[in-house]
Image 1 (cartoon, rainbow, N blue to C red):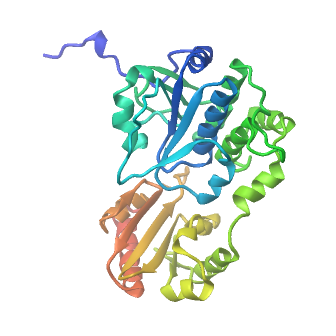
Image 2 (cartoon, rainbow, N blue to C red):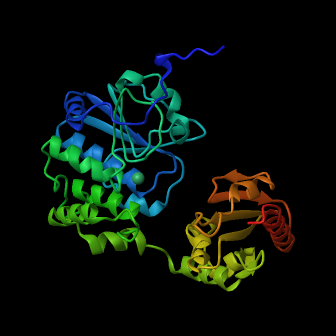
Length: 358
Ligand SMILES: [Mn+2]
């Protein structure tokens, strides 16, 4: 027999308080810890910086903690704010206690990883500000608005609640303002206003931030046009190695140790290169093989499903090589030569596509 209890109603990831209540808790805090999802992107870092600057504006001590690797160009916008990179091998928890923990741009236990025990132990002190549809009960107070194009779009409303001028914090050159941090999140989460989530409301918000002094062209150059020429040369090598596999539906690129030596490019500069072939409509996935000492590092990316075709689950393919990740982004390592690894990848993709008749 099954009993149904009303007490076990499924958790709903929705707002359970107002932004003005969050604003009040921020104002009355003494020391605030702000954190976000691991491997933070532009919106995550922009959101952490925005809350840091709001705390500074209302005279509350705060520090931001970030976990995992991120694109180093994002350091450009940190300025003088206290952002601590938590060492994943030896997370050092604070000796002094925080009386408020703010989690931004995520509400999922799986995304806060390393800091989960710290957050779990302080449940009553944790507030969560997010714009994602799914999350967990990691905070006692939560504002979730999925209509916001970025988490920073939600934080603009928090700034208004706190009556903080958006130009707050700007240095003599106009950089490092609250508005700049908010704009970084908005611009990067909307693909610099190209994606479907860049709607009239996001453009209106962008206009407000520009009026508050954001130097958009300079900011774009600092964040997106900041690479070394060696990185571009390496990219050209990867692209010139491109061939299609799996009946022409997947791109395969490879970089040898010689490619790195000749161009002077570095493995850590490869972010984004694997995505480039996805600009071709017929290509459903892209694979980049990178030769390292005795091992070939493999990166997989795939496009989301559309009406006429399912997506290629690259997580599953990476798993056959002992790797993993997500449906659309995964990685693995293969102990083989570059040529042998390419053969194995080609075979694995052929098998996967035949088995699932995708
Ligand atoms: Mn976001």
